[in-house]
Length: 340
Image (cartoon, rainbow, N blue to C red; front, side, top):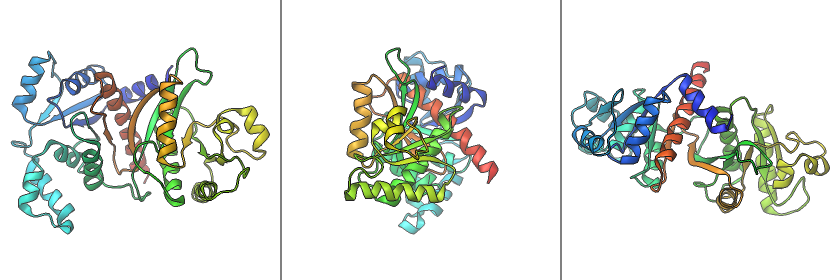
């Protein structure tokens, strides 16, 4: 079964409440209808209820089973406004500003997630990435295990011509421009958690990518990767991780055997951590455009609860897939919270 199909099946096994804040957009409505019908998620639409219903009529979308929450009339609005005020008071937010801000669907949706009225949010078909990420960080907040939010792509190699098969995590390809060694270590650990959530029945195997393998080159850029790897090894000694490692040694067992005598990954990496955003962005686009991989993302990692960004050029299928991924992340977050 393809990696993405496994994620969809996982989401369907225990549907989570996923809130969508751009519910007048036809792509959001059509993807929501599919997700609701197929049992991938329990959909909550946030926005002007009349306009959402009018849009559903225009685009022939059946809203059966979906919950519509209008910030202008919802019984939740006063409590969410108070929560926002307490959350942002130290930044100078006033009661009047909180009352205005809570009326915006993006803010309202993320407050629902923060306060447990929803399990995850998906936005970005209309809102900018900057607005989506900033709101998620300010309202949902950063996971206490991390100090920053980063991103990843779920890359799927499922075509007959792919010599490698299955899913890979590429990180960070969209947010953190030039991480220092501590930040790079956190990105690696968050990416390993993303693999644990989404690469069903696979153990995370992390490659800290570089132009050097096992000390074959000497440069400050290599030192950063080596030191980041050491930080991860100290904090997560059970995690399979190699670094510094070139891409071929990360994914080709024969090359890993020659170049890394004491490898923990053995050329079977399923998490590729790039040293900076230049490498990450170029890498995922090469895999997508030349290698024929399907890219889902960028997705966010390192938040307390799931919130994901869409491209404003997204398709209905893109939205549907991100809903499924967000639901799977929410399942994992729920399990983690129960353990803690």
